[in-house]
Length: 477
Image 1 (cartoon, rainbow, N blue to C red):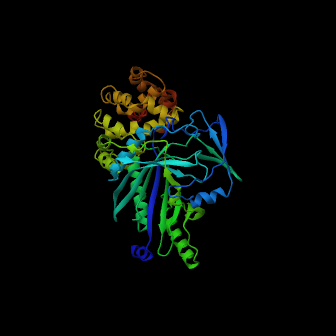
Image 2: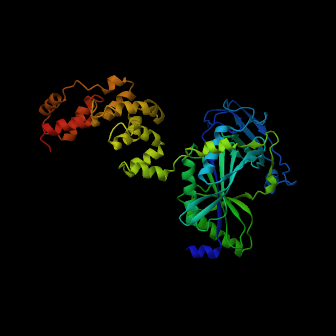
């Protein structure tokens, strides 16, 4: 198959935009998405401006012909910067540090001095009519199973407003997302097969998730630029679903082959659809959309900051998996620890007991179960069962707490009981209680007896303790 793609002269490159987990990029507003009603709205009509090349961008001119009105929802977590009624503040230092850290992981060269630019926005998704962006690093690379993939540029920019509603010639945006810091990673057109495109996307995703980035739907947006021999470059937006990546590329190759037959190949932007096909969005933007930001000074990145961010770089998931597997944890528990970002907590707790599986369960499975049982959010559970509390509990294992009682102890803590009260053993004579139940209701199954006892003494006795007594009294080996 690789020879076939070589014959087609398949060329592709990726562009990844990932939200960072900090306040906004050019003000101190929180990066919170809102589901409630806005305080008020404002309306704007946006006009294209001349870029640094002295001409108006083609795509911007095309959008202007639609004469759209844009309405923006404003919340109490927005400020005048997002309304374009106040100059931008200095760049968010925390966001800058995260991007520098990722640049190191991508083996890139950092610009010591760089210019913040304005990029013309053509769909109304920014009140100013432009997006601020700044190049941070260049000429990096990652290794894939089929060779090195070059990273062309790494940029830091502000996210756009979130589209709330669109009807006819009117589009409504929410300003809650506007200004959230984004890292943009652009690879060189080094990708030559659909499989390499997918592998590269997964590798870049792993590097991003190792750093302080936002998680969840909508926090990452990925595009692919693709062409075959004789065809013009096409940019496919929304190319982040790993399940359909290869299908999307194969479908696009066929579409471009058809365009070549009909002599209808154009520079264009298309949208990735769930079935692996794409649809036309707009003409491809040109370099005329960029011009310097005049409200901010040149961004100077000191050697001290570069060296500081290079120290103690986070490990990637593959490195963490290798570390966790050394403790004999199964694949499910390893995945849960990484998914819930509990690797550092696991390291902190590793000295408390030789039972590393118990530690992993306390950090993941038990907390999930208690969230459901006690009708509390995962965040509420993790706040109560923080690493210091878990450390105190696990240090009592095999001394004052049996392993089988751990979940019961954690449940009591979640219910608001004190630490001393939670670890205190029940004064219930379980042996006597069980004997009386068997006498009262003979010939039930062990599961039925367990259900009755656990139901009656919920939170006071552990399942393992009840099971042991039942097996002894029922002579079950």
